[in-house]
Length: 153
Image 1 (cartoon, rainbow, N blue to C red):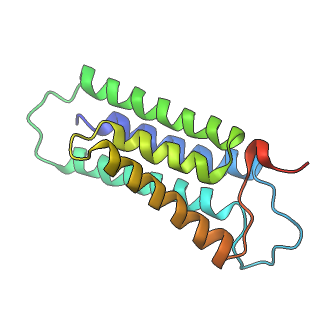
Image 2 (cartoon, helix red, strand yellow):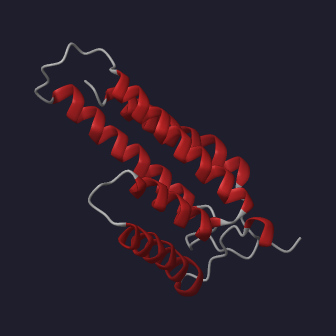
């Protein structure tokens, strides 16, 4: 049950992104054909992945063999707060820096607490992830991504 609170928050935040924030905040250009990649697709995919990850964690915490009393511990509240803070940084970076740098920052923040990865490895993973998103959506899919302050108005 220790993971149920962060899992529920991840599901709630993913649903908020999917049904409120993305439809209200991502503008689709007129030249994007139905059925092709659009600027809202990557945020939508990330929101669905967040919902799925939260659902898996929730199912694991509910169905798993747990010996704790079922109350949220200080550690689970701390993790939930850190996740919410990282997602908030991602949203701010998305509006300020654009999609690719925001993804770089988010992946770097998500890997920051991991003792398994050194700083150069974290930087490499974040760079490869952001570069892959750029290549798939912009180069291969010919889909514009939000550019934040760098967008020409």
